[in-house]
Image (cartoon, rainbow, N blue to C red; front, side, top):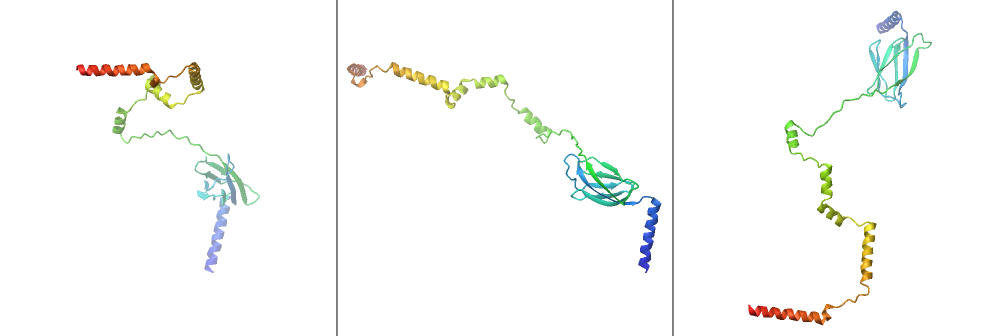
Length: 209
C-alpha cells in the first residue's frame, strides 16, 4: 500500500511539473543522412540544449527519445558541421519525426614537413658532406665523352640506317674483289726465295758476332 502511494505521488508530481512547465512531451524520432552522399551518418550525438541532456543515434543513423515542444536539439559528429533543430510547438500529435541532413566539415590543416635528421649536428654533418648534382652542361659533357660514346657503340644495337650502310659497303667490296684471283703465298716461289735469303743473311750476322 505504501509503494502504491509513492507511485501515485510521483505521477501527480510529474504531471504537475509538466503543467507548470507548459511544454508538452514529444517523441522525437528520425534518421540522419549525409547531405552530399545521401548515406546515413552513424553514432551522431544529439544534445538537448534546453534540458542539458545528451542522446545518441545508432549505427544506422536512427534516433528516438522524449523531448518537449520548443526544445533546441544540437546534432554533432566528427567531420561534420554542427546543426541545431528546434522542435515545433502546437503539434497535433505527441510525436515529431525529422530527417536530418548534415554537411561534412572540411578542415584544412597546415603543412607539416618531416626531416630525416634527429638533431642539428646530424643535419650539419650531412649538409657539409652533401654531393651536389651536376648541372646540364656537365651532364652533356659526360654523355658526349669518348668513353660514354664507346660504351654506347658497344651496347646499343644498330638501327636501320646503319645496317643499310654496312650491308652496302660489304656488297661493294664483294663486287670489287669478285674477279680478283686469290693467290696462296705458300705456292709463291718469290716468297720462298725472300724467306731463304732472310734466313741466310741472319745466319751470317750471327757468325760475325
